[in-house]
Length: 144
Image 1 (cartoon, one colour):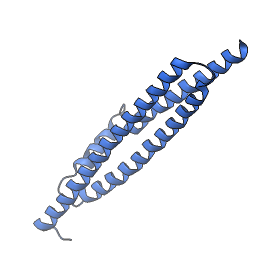
Image 2 (tube, helix red, strand yellow; image 1 turned 30 degrees about the vertical axis):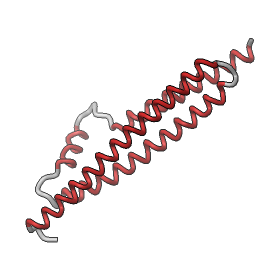
Image 3 (tube, one colour; image 1 turned 60 degrees about the vertical axis):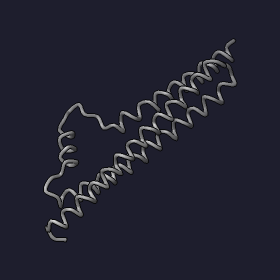
């Protein structure tokens, strides 16, 4: 493909489609995170109401939910990484490269934390909460 105006317009159209798809994936990712947060809050509420040995099953389901949540976050990370690689490869053929430029700027900021790392904090926190609740329930049950 040469550097003709038509080629540039085609590339720009492809770039725009990829950017829209990446934004769509990010929106689905946010919705998925909201769903898992709601589910975990429901689990936490159910356990706080019952708070007995039967709660162990709910807590184990909560841990399994969090593991699934972390795997889903990982899959979205991989999907976004692939999309952004495609966007950057298209940008190499265009006069400007806003996605790549933005990423390069972010990498230079010392206190920038990748959003995937931040997303993982919540399921890990819920897992620690569930493990603590399991230990507490077992301790109360068998020391009373």
